[in-house]
Image (cartoon, rainbow, N blue to C red; front, side, top):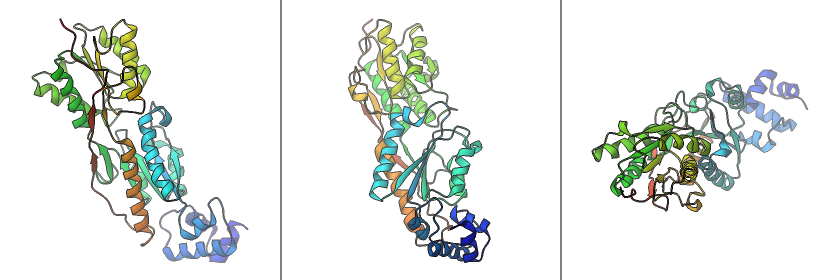
Length: 348
């Protein structure tokens, strides 16, 4: 059985059949139904299961994680989010298909080809990078979608994110209340990560409330990896006065920082306190157990998947390419988790 056989049966061109099978927009519902009926009558199945074509579903949920210096499986936080997505997909009998296009995503042929294929019934965009949202193509091609991040193709609608500002402010306030006044910042370039801005703003708010200028705090930028934390802290520890505490924008950099502090003959937390962000798996079992800001990554993944499935269910009751209902931003609370890597500053 060939594509031409389906086209002849449906009374359309082979190009039209291809458009229907790849879920390309701008094909009338009448033509689409005729082609799918011909596919079912003839038993033609190109790459997807016959039931998927007959129902107009592929039973595949997409997850898009763009990156410029990191990859999906290097970041335990992102893996935890995907685990939350997968848990909901298993309940619904869906598979998860992950795409990891390099930035800038708009120029990724890999991502564009996948979007055009129509293989996903819906998708979750992990909007970690500034610039044009990766959900733009999802919206353009009428996919049901949700964005894990601060912005999306439709402003702040369909977004889910943690309260990074409040979490960072709580972490900095905690160190300041312990008596630390020489605090180093291990960050990332704000142009490299959307979440960097609210976290740094949270630190700054705590400093200002305690009568300190955040601009005066020594800062070195890394790239969210353990290695960059190790390298960056070496520079901070060479400053005078030496920081008695370190605020790290994520846990992996905090772990690297702890290794470097110890390698320079200093103790954590007796000489230098270290506070991370994310509470990744393993943070509680690190040596010393890491003080950090916990964000509910698994729960955010679950919420994103459930919202996309609500859109998919709603779409099944309406025309395939009709606009999907949008939801208002969902902000998950963060929580400071105090463990063994932090304490009061050393005595003068």
